[in-house]
Image (cartoon, rainbow, N blue to C red; front, side):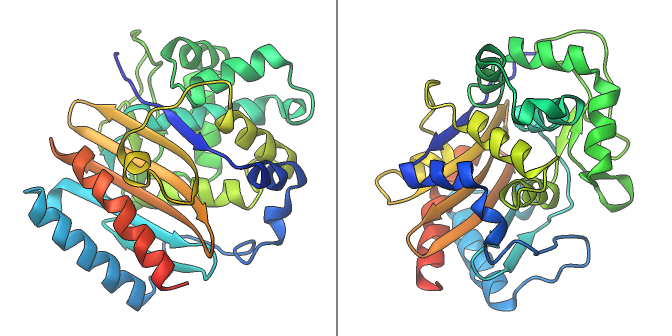
Length: 293
């Protein structure tokens, strides 16, 4: 299956320092819990809805064409629109393969050979289908999904979530999710949770979370300048992100850090103008985060 999407990471030196020390565990968001009962912040919710309404009109989209989520990590404020409405994930589901690798190989957190780290970086940042298929075959699709499930990233009772049911690049082995019948799936809430737990050093272990961020960063692997990254070009921010593109399924999921702001932004779209919407969403939200810091 010809999926094509990429991770992008603009990482300043101080950001590498945070990765290395695991100091995120001491941040204000360290004990924040995002589940199905977590309330949104009324002011942030209203602001996000206003931004979204303007962009929907501008790009001739409707309420059915997108789902978005915003988590302000500095102040533990949440805003979401249709957080449990599942979309076909395109290559966003590759984040599940990366998580599963470190669960299956816990020693890799501190003893990962350079070649394997590069290959995982090719899968995670460059979204290389060959590398994704290599690791998903090694681990097994059912094992990967069982690990995803163990973190609560998929719940059929609440709209679905993160689903990794097919090897990238083709093949006949397919397991479709019970909610949307997708081979790969994602919801806003579960994408927010994945990156929140990564920032909290709670994916597998603090050491594994730090190594996963190293792999996402992979400074030796080129990145692509589209969607959120295109919209934030020229701003004083650092970004770690996973985007996905397949036909009109156009998504971006990012952790964005800059002076006075640190937040997670998720945008899932199913519309021909989805890329334009995401490109415009990012700077509008970044302006909001600077106003409300």
